[in-house]
Image (cartoon, rainbow, N blue to C red; front, top):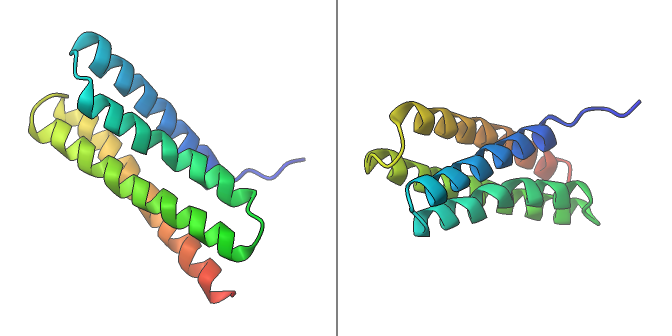
Length: 118
């Protein structure tokens, strides 16, 4: 039986939410620039977590998670812009930003724990 990996699942689920946001922003609101930015950074999180899990070394693992951490911060920036410009509803933005905060906490913990074991 395969053990569940919470950061893999959370980053994947977050990526799905970001894809749906991108579809809404580009099709319904015709917001292409920020929509593309948030799509790139928001889906990059899970991709980097996946790469980290398959990393060739502990250093590679940490490096990929650091990239994922930075991508979460960038995504949070775009979401704040979308919220504060009133492009998306505050509730949606706050929910996505809360997901970012959760991902940041998890990634920070994993990165620090992994560094201690180097």
